[in-house]
Length: 307
Image 1: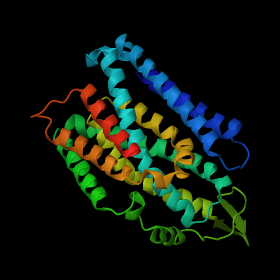
Image 2 (image 1 turned 90 degrees about the vertical axis):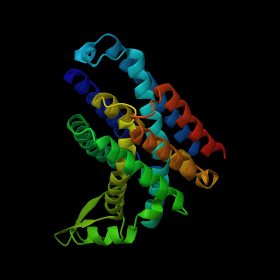
Image 3 (image 1 turned 90 degrees about the horizontal axis):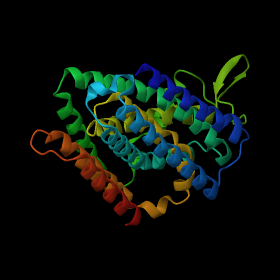
Image 4 (image 1 turned 180 degrees about the vertical axis):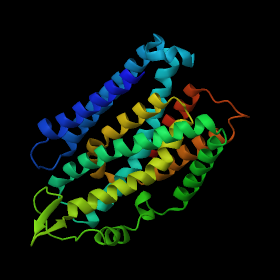
């Protein structure tokens, strides 16, 4: 199985290099039409990878036959995990928009900040997922802990007047960063750091990046336990999560221009968290098939988009 982990990580690196090194080398704002195209591309290769997951588990490659899971079951679990993460990542868009607005980041530099933010998210989520998988393997009660976290998160989201940004004090985070490195309000192109009078200075881009990374840690505390409610296979959890995160940059530019149109989405996402959390808490009493879970999650998400 190690070979497939390496294959996937190489695939992710290639996508990131092509993104920043080829398709988005110049600093320019991404329009809604272009962002929708790239969102479609990311969804396309994510769904195509679903076929790869099917082949790996159907043929028992890399020792996956020991899991006694068919290719169809693995592909369905991957798809459900991807949909959960994709839906929950919409709320992350609202936080990103608030962060960029607060720190005054021009639109032409936002894609570069998001690129490094996504790279950091891949690394951090990898650590979270592997740690979570290890905990679930040795301690069954962690399932109930994850379920409780999701239910509490859902209830907190119901009470918020705005999307996830309401729970993050941007000013306090910026002051905390300023204790470790001097911060300037001056932009130096797309530079994150620059030297002035022999001292390294953090530009607003670096501050925004660090705050985005912090916010992603908070969101990962919801989204990763939610995917563990679908499957405990680390490879499926990791690949479905990362595939959804990779498309977050283009999704941001597509959704950010239409934020006001999704005012009811917060409640939809809260119901998704509540459903998944209750599924984990009641797993010994009620067995919900993965296909049914996928249908419920899609329905809740669509109701939020169209409401």
